[in-house]
Image 1: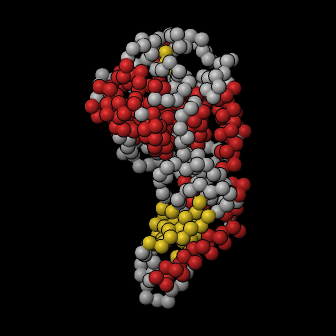
Image 2: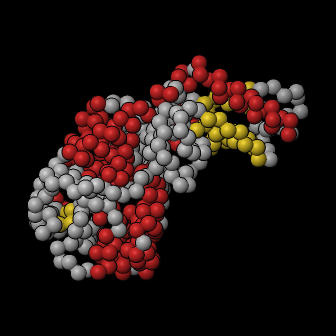
Image 3: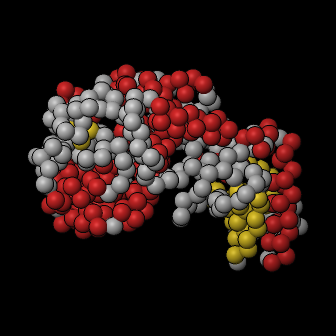
Length: 405
């Protein structure tokens, strides 16, 4: 068996490198590869192939894995991210910019685009796109008119020129890219996530209304759990994600919540008015949790679902922690946001040809992203008993884990 494993590893290396002449491999050229810092503990995607033992002389064969092209082009993703950054730094921004501080009123809208596109996911439904989630459906009027999406038409209009400029990027990817970039530009953590999400094709594929949280339910804690548990998220992730309310403001004419204006919002930036959760409502930090805990400023908004984070014992342990420790909040937020961004998504990896021996119990193509300085393909062979892991770093061969941002 050891000899067969060694031979298979050699075959795997030759097969992977020989794909350069195939259409799939041409899509994995340097021009189409993107590298962005991976998360601290990136998930691994494996395609397992099991073959029955054979007593006949061993003969290599080729097995096709994942036969759909990646949805978004890596080069365009990188360029689009820079355009989003420029948008955040120049559009509807305060005329007096503070050093190293984002003063742009559109930041919250871009964050919500990613959230609300993926937040319709139902883990109990297997079929795509019926299960909802990050599939670009939020671009259609029928979904934009849902009560929870009030005002998001403005954010969509802002990034539509970027979509037009980079047509190979799907809306599903663009929404998540804009959301993660806005968090980072507002002073928050860098969120590593994967790209390659497929878009739904028509408004008839939009989810029904009522999938997103309501701000004022009769039982706020129970409501939050009902909505987020449906997505497969837990109490820690609910509290961490709620911390994104450190950004933005609520307008009563849109949501029915908040004051028409406060001392923090009456002068903008952007259109004046609304009520924010924090005094510095364009800065991503842990002040949301501090303000709710202290409840000292009547000009700051506290929704019933916000107050529940310090009233419910299961939520309170995390809310207290985040109020005291911003690093802990950032760490948990990054993990929760990345998970949310993948919910319900259909990733479309390209073809991968892998040669295996009939007698091998399993061969897995596993992605193990790691920082490298050059945009090249790294093929690593790891032997673990009867398993060979073939790691393709930063290439389209590995499919959905490809574009790490």
